Figure 1 (cartoon, rainbow, N blue to C red):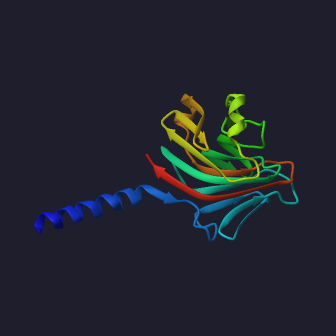
Figure 2: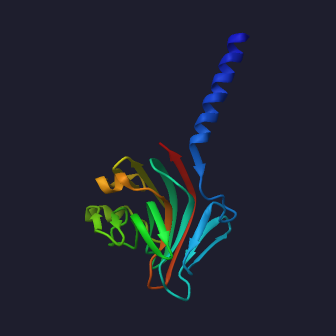
Figure 3: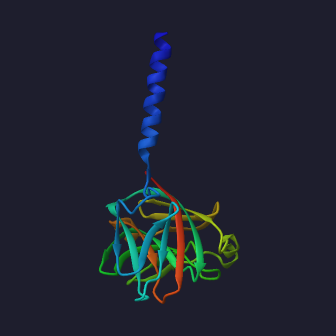
Length: 198
């Protein structure tokens, strides 16, 4: 009986530790834990996070209030209209000027899963063109991004898109940001945004 009790406590402790490591960044109800940068639209409807171009047709960001160093993030997105967006890692925002690195979310033929450095070196790595077939435009897609030290690996619908190592990324500090690209006409839906610290 005593052994069973000890085993039950150990299992409960292990489950608690596992649960602690995974964090829902979006609660499905509101934007708690996030900050809006710019005048573009970020809102919650039917349990989904929606990003949409506003009247200014500028860049817009939704950033986490917390910074994250090494982590694995999974999320689902569905693009409507233009669908040009992205997931920034270790990034900071001043007004609508972002410093950091973007894992691209874009329409077909525009390098979803690649890594872009805004206001810096530009494209660091693009996926092989044949990998574009893994993007399901207008449907739900699952993206996974693993950031550890100076390495970033992106996956789209279970397929590795890029694996990139860079000293500057390794030195980066900041949060996670979702982007609306400038130009107008963009609408992207998001859900199931879950982060695990590594």
